[in-house]
Image (cartoon, rainbow, N blue to C red; front, side, top):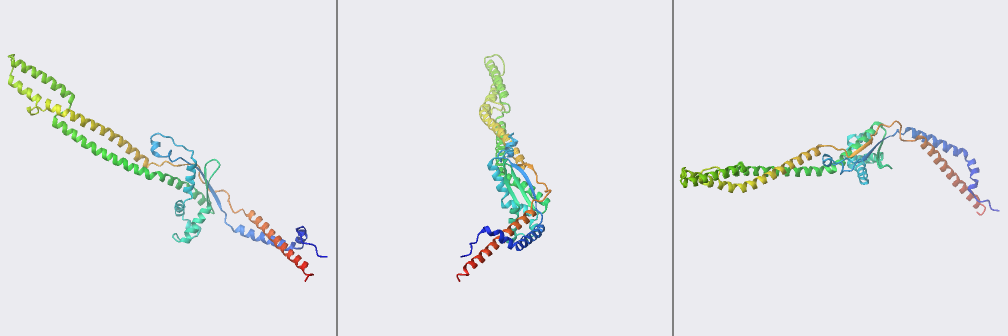
Length: 356
């Protein structure tokens, strides 16, 4: 009769035969994992929580004009903040600021191997996610609890700064346009003002309304006196003719005369209207330039910080008991597999030996 087939049902007796070896393997795994776990440095986790604001509502130009700042961010604002936080330029700024090359013992900056090591370790220690309340949780892990908190807060500041840089370049270009517009209007206004002054001097028009009434009054009185003198009513007719010529002709000797008044009145009205229009535009351009200069030099945060990162009061990892427990379970499972395979091999050898 052939021997009975091998089955896992008989694993209990097998383990009983190998119990001392299995126990030795489990104890050795527990001791080794405990030694390794207790040699691992403590890692501390610091978390900052913030809401990114809408860049349009955080634009200083709109705030100066009276628009309100919206604290709730849109989905694209959250994605933009996370993308900025995970970008390499942000990592490079923080790595340089906190001298993480020396902290991680990676070597000198500029070496490809050292750069890769620092970036990989920095990225593995950084966790920036969007939580269920549509806020961003930025966490950083390090063996130095204070450094972890400082790095997390610095990352929030850098994200805020780079978020503002997205609109800062365009605002500077707009400021340059405002300056060019103001300079052009100022030059045009000065030219128009000088032309108006020259026209007033040329035509002798300084107060057209009053001068018009004066000319009309003097012209009527002089002409009436002349007609009276010519009719024998008394008076110097020749003198009155010269006076009338002076009032009506530009070459009559009078500064204020009808001929210059008629010539200059239309030109002066056009120059005055143009100068006043340029003056209003110049005042508006100056106000816009001052507002633009104010906003370009202002700093309106693009994030609403709910919770800054604080030094952790307890370690985040390693979970030493979990390492030991996992190692013990894994060692026991491997020992069982090895023993089972060994018993299976022996069983097959016994079954094939009579046939040989």
